[in-house]
Amino acid sequence: QVQVAESGGGLVQAGGSLRLSCAASGRAFITKAMAWYRQAPGKQRELVARISSGGSTNYADPVKGRFTISRDNAKNTMYLQMNSLKPEDTAVYYCNYDPLGSSYYLPWGQGTQVTVSS
Image (cartoon, rainbow, N blue to C red):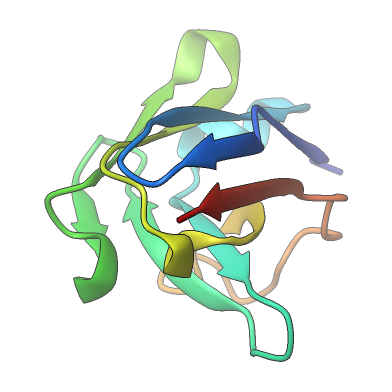
């Protein structure tokens, strides 16, 4: 079964940038639509960006114009470039299948913490 591992989080000042990575095991990654999610303290997990197997992308309104999702199928890796970060972007970020392209989720990874200071 495909497993995912997120990395690249950290502490950054408002206006700064981070690049998150999602490394996936297994060939199934190549054929699957993927997504980045985030969960802030006391809030539900939300989808912030999605990318199809062919590279089409879509973003949640709060991150449009600031975040860019991409994937390298040859490396079984997905990325999230986050620019102009805001304190409200503070959350644990996860990657997983896009529910538009899969009837189930992979086991959730540990996620990577992003903290944006004001």
